Image (cartoon, rainbow, N blue to C red; front, side):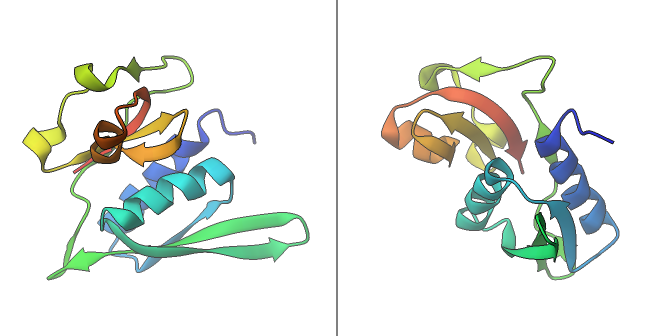
Length: 132
């Protein structure tokens, strides 16, 4: 079955894994998913990830989830821009997530980055998701 929203699928796997108190979750590998996970690592929301070859030509990403005192570090993770409704934002119009406590992940011409990094680089783009 083909996925219409691969990033949304990965975010749902992370959300469900944390609700089930899993130490890691698996998601099909892609460059865009890996870039989103890199941002989550830099911002401290996950412990890490690794690319695992399932069989020849098929790879998956094993995402190591992070907990603090038994509670998931990610309280909320939501897709903003979907394949049916793309959401783009200039950097000056990008709202802060929970007054700066959370992050938005953007796909910009300079790569995938958090809203904080995008503000420093003064570049806008597609708002992929928000994390708190």
